[in-house]
Length: 267
Length: 271
Image (cartoon, rainbow over all chains, first blue to last red; front, top):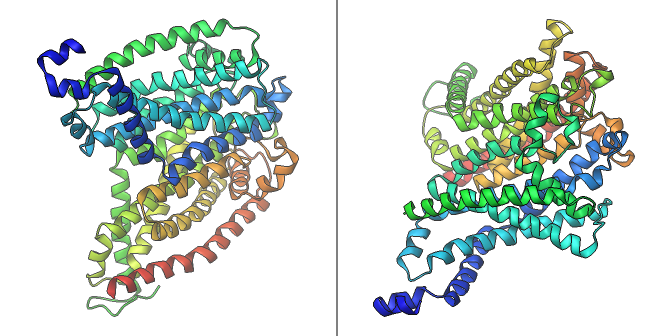
């Protein structure tokens, strides 16, 4: 930083530096939240996941009980991962909209730290995701969902869910930056999301699937993440955590490369 | 329907019918030429069907011990009709706010034609998605075993159920301020009805306090009727009558409301 200030004085001082990064990130995160937190959006973040949670629970609780599974304990991680995914997809739409409306170009022309644009985006996604995650956990608690691991387990659960959200957001952010059609990018990302979510252990254990699908379910990254969330909540077998960490690391590397490229190219 | 305002051109029911058909044809062509709308109304319900079968097929059985697809396929066909109403709502909202409605008003056509054309196009869309998705469900083992008359009855039930959401879509399109609002106002209730219906599981599988709600849900009546008319897994007469009662009740409330909102728009624009 100090070296950079030597050859490009005014501008470099204005946009570089960790203090600027933090302050500008916070500023942009606040702006992103104000833009995206309309009444309809909040309904989408809180009411819709609860509708899915109570809906799935009402329909399948009794049938899962007949198979010896407590669905109230089984389901919440699935809804959390589902909503984390949908939040990440909406981040792509918001990013694409910023590019389409010229907001990104405007920020680029200003002495704004380019890392702050990305960090601000991720921070606001994190806040939006956190609202959904907490809403689902609260509703699940009412219906009998418990953390056998106590407060520490609950905190780890939320932290893991947020990590998943941020890794996904890097990937969807790349897609959003590469697209100038906000509506199209949302629809395109939703398409693979549903099969990925459903062909996993999110909603039913591997044994319930037709045998030819079981390998797909077992090796699904969604299964890895959902199993890890369940492991954190139950505290019995922590082995799935390693698999989830490996997946998240690989995805983070791939997504960051794509996002960096897309960000450089986006105008 | 009589022609509304005294227009300079031809009048009478025959002219209105011709105009309605023309405008309905436009609506259907726009729908068939939009890949995204086709994906949303045909492909997504089928993805839902095959996913639900894969995930829950091993845990939930069909009606009367049959395979799950006998319950799920009719439910998904009906849900496609309901959630597809977004296409109508958004399309009509755009017509009203991008100048097409105003343009049509300056032409010598009946004032009722744009509304009737939209309705006809919507019912055509319901029928197209229903035929396409039942054909695709055939792959998963869904069959019409009750004869051709029952199969026709199946599609009649889908149309009757679809008309409920058609009216809701028209009223919302006339009242809403934005496309986004139209979208949310139609998608949320459709999703709610799907979960709390006999579409995924029979009414007995729900907790006791929810059973009255699930039983009263029009999607439950329509699903039960459609199951009876396709695979024969249950009674037909009562659910068919319930579905018709729902369709008539919604029409009785929504039709005057839609016409009133539509007329009021005229007055506002004319003044």
